[in-house]
Image (cartoon, rainbow over all chains, first blue to last red):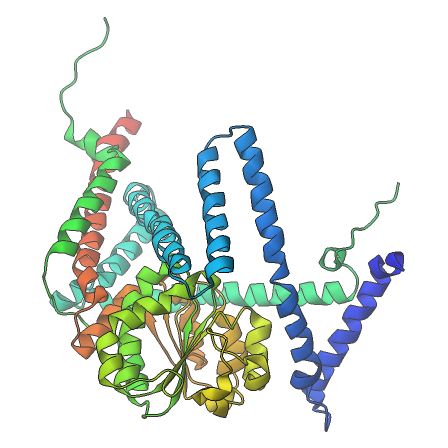
Length: 218
Length: 283
C-alpha cells in the first residue's frame, strides 16, 4: 500500500483527476456543478488546514539547529539562544495566558516589531552607500544610468516638486516605460514559466513537485 | 626610504571615501530632520488624489475589509498610510472588518486603534456593530479563496473566539458584500486578494512599500487595483490632503534631505573618479 501511495503513477493520477475536476468545469460552466464551492474550495481548505502543522516542524528544526550551534559554540551562538528564548516565551505566553494577554503582545511589540524594523531599516544605509559609491560615469551606459537615477531621485524627494517640475515628466516617463515594461516582462515570463511548469508536472516530467525522486538508471 | 610624503589630496578623498562616512552622515541628517518640527508643504500625486476620492465616496454603513498584509518590518513604512486610511474610514462611518494576512502582524491593529482612539470614541464605534477584528483569518490563498465565495463557512469566529453571527458580518456572504478592500502589503500575499476578490469586482486599494510600486502599477493600469499609495510618501500625501500631521509628514523632511545627501555623495564620488582615479589610470 505504501509503495502504491508513493508511486509516481498514483500521485500523477490524483493530480490529473483534481486538475480535470477544477480546470474544465471552470470554463465549461456545467449546470448544477459549482467548481469553487465543490472541489476547488474543499481542496484549498484542506491545504489551509495542513499548512499550520508545518510550523511545528519549523520550531523543532530551529531548536535542533539552535542546540547544535550552542553545543559547538558556533559564531553567534548566543543569538541563537536569544532566538530560542523568544520562541519559548511566545509559546509559553500564548499557551498559559492566551493570545489576548499582555505578555504575548509585549513580545510582539517589544521584540519582533522593533527587531524586524531595524533589520529592514538597515538596508537603507547599504542602499545609500552602494548608490553613492557605485554610481560612477565610467562609460556611456553607466552615464545613462547615472542620469536616469539622478532624475528619479530628484523627483522622488518631496521638496523638489515645490520648487521645480522639470524632473517630474522625465521621471514619470522612465517609471511608466522602462520600469513598467521591465516589470511586465518579468511578470509575463514568470507566469508563462509557471504555466509551463504546471503542464510539465501534469505530464509527469517534474516529479519533484510530487515528492517523488527519479531513480537513476545504472 | 623611497616613500615620499604626500599632502592631503581632496580628489583622492572624494574618490575613495569610507562608507562609514556615508552611514554616519545619513544617520546625523536623519535624526536632525526627524526632530525638526518643520511642516513643509507637499505636492500630492494623481494616485493619492484617486485613492482619496475612492475613500471619500464610502458611505456610512458600507462594509470595508481592512487587511494588515504587512510584516512588522514594513509596517513603519506603511504606518502613515494605514493610519490615514483608517482615519478616513472612521470619519466616513464605514463598518470595518480588520483581518490579518501575515501572522507577525497580529498586534499591529492595536497600534493603529490606539493612535485613533479619539475618533473611535467620538464616532461611537462599537465592537461587533461597527467593527470586527478577525485576526489571522487569511492564512493563505485557500482561505482567501474560500472566504470570497462562502464567507460564512470560511470565517466563523472573530479573533476573540466569538461567532461572527453576533456582528455585522452576519450579512456577508461573498465578495459582492464588500464595498471596498484596503490592503497594506509588504509581500506577495496581495495577489490572492486580487485573484479572488478584485478580479471578481470588489474594489481594491493599496498602500504598498516602495519596492512593490513597480509591481502594483500595472494592476492599477488594468483596473484590478483602483488606486495605490506609494510607500511612506503616499501616506504623507494623504495626511497632507486630510490636513493631519502624522508619521508620514513627520518623516518627509528627512526623506527629502536624505535624497539630496545621497545625490551629493554621488556627485562627490564622480568628481573623485574623474579628477583622481581616471587620471591615475591614464598614468
